[in-house]
Amino acid sequence: MAKRALSPSARRERQRLVADRARALALLVDGSRADSPAVDGTILVDGSWYNAHYWLRFGLMLRALGLKPESMVLLLGPYSRRESRNCAAAFNIVREHILDIDRRDAAATAEARRLLKDTQTPDDVLNWKLPHDFPPAQLYDSILKEQRKASLDLDDPQLEGRVAKALTALDVAVQTLDMHQPSLLLLSHALNYELSALSWIAAKRGIATVVLFGNFGTQRFWRLTRPEDVFDWCDRLEREDFEALEPSRANALAEAGGEHVTGRVSGKSTDIGAIHAFQNDTISLERTSVTSAMKWDAETPIIGVYVSNLFDYPHCFGLDQYRDFADWLEVSLPVMAANRKANWLLRAHPCDVWYGGQSMVDLLPPELPAHIGICPKEWNGAAVKGGLRCRGDVSWHGGARVCH
Image 1: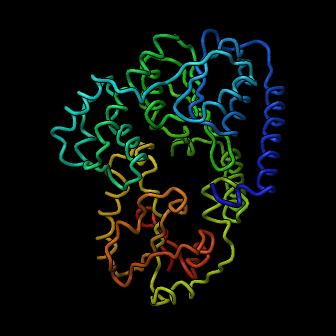
Image 2 (image 1 turned 120 degrees about the vertical axis):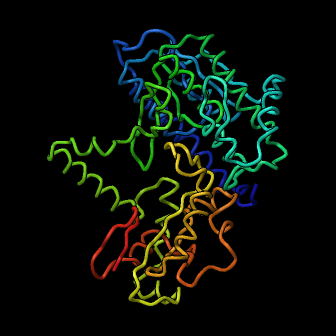
Image 3 (image 1 turned 30 degrees about the vertical axis):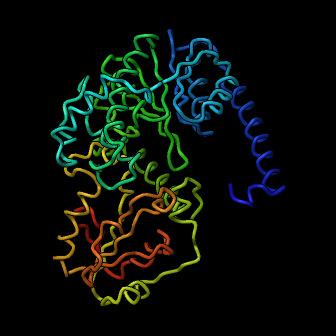
């Protein structure tokens, strides 16, 4: 613990935060009461991931469906059990179930050893045949998140145990659903070992599952009605959905989206990504300052490439053209190097420093061609956008915005 955390002011701040959370939780519980329940039977409630906003979304779901706490069972994982129990107790949820996926299961360990025996490359993992037809991409992402690597590290001394944990999670999911026979699952995510297994098995059994997700300051609930929906992250609209909208609704969505994006790039959004991407507003860039810093010709078009965090669940949207983000970068870099009709500005994900682990710069060669530059960390996302602002026409090539 840092010395400043031991100061009287830091202690008072922690006490204030605890009191504020308790008052907010009491208001949330009071506002979530409703009659006429819309769901019969047992409801499994995810408590494996503690976040105050998640419990806010849970309260909204309680009120919307008139759910009754006496029919609920709290699912606990290895972390934040005390905090989750406190929140559940405030809602009068008294039953709980431990998702024990860290146990050393001999059968799972033996199966993990068998799978790894003939695995030579990370690509091989994506071709594994797993119990219950579980998608190996989900297993890949869970392990990658723990390793904090760009691609699955087959030399990881803990790899066998990690694979065994993923297989154990499938067994635990089956046992949990068999024991409680739920009519509804309320989850915080459909990712990582225990929750990806639960959501997959539940969807295969036709059990209603709702992910109480939120992002960018908005509620992003989504329902899984079939196993493939684990890759329909946030239940986003497809292109045909947008095209089928009435003009008035399409315009209203465009206006709301524009307001949200404007506020976000202005530093007004307080999610972790926006904080790191846009709230450092001390830098102001013009196109000439970008070209000068990179020693580029000012007349050459600039293509900005915003790279994802390398290990943050690359397959959550059903990625299938590449093994992972590292594979995408390895394939794309030679294309950028060969295309000297444009200058390329690569920006690492703003949360890389917060996450730790490998970042984009760790995958790049020591020397890049002169027309490929790396965006300095102190340039925030909005400043870079301003620095790439076009003076003339704009065209789109393969999804990239090219300024002329």
